[in-house]
Image 1 (cartoon, one colour):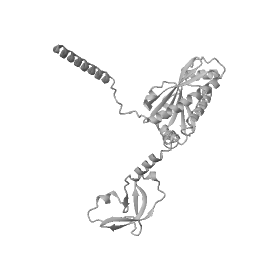
Image 2: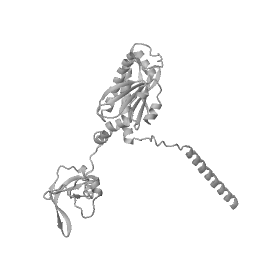
Image 3: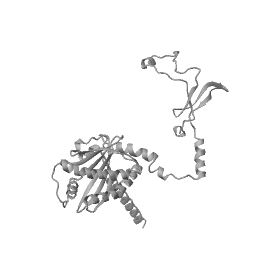
Image 4: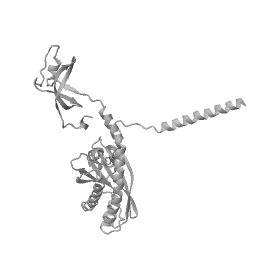
Length: 328
């Protein structure tokens, strides 16, 4: 009986080892090569969450807008948010395309709107009173077609800016139509956040893509999150006991003070030729107080001296305008 139990234990041990080996092989199969030339920049969860909320709001208004423009019931749903490098995004586009590159006032980067050609032709047909079943040939938009689609783009931008209004206020100064992806002005180091929308448009289903460059998002969204967006809207008053605890903790936080004896500028050749006994003249008059700094900010001024055998500084001036956040 003991031998049987021992054999059973060994068999279970072998099964466990075999399962672990199989799991290791499966996990190894999922290992992918890392592209050091185009590393993926992952946006923070806060930014992705805010983008989700903004574009969920956009789907509601965009569906109503398309329905009113075409007199056909349209339902819009957001499918996913992904990140691509500029090169990956351009490689995914065939020719010709319906692309609108939008430039934001006083902010670097841009927003790209990609429309399916079939959607454009259906929209043009329905705007003209047709059935909207004409298949668009393999060519760029004509001048007249581009003029009609530009109205849709204007409406889309209006709905987009309304959806963004709670988080950031910005203006799109101009939109440029491009049929060739290689004509888009994209920074090779930029990462693009791709928002994919699905539009149930009559009897057809099409995808509209919004592509934000990382430069643009950092310019319009980061400051908004820190100062006036999502976080400020949810600030709550602290419990007095908790607030006092924070206050006491801050009061006990050590802060470094540095006294600047003076400064000057010399050429590198002269610096390299300095030796023991040389004298450097500073741009600091003997009668003027010295700067007392914290976090590289001038907080006070004073005169040097000696106290109890140690070097000391006597404060004669305090900078009242310095804010606490500049010190911490």
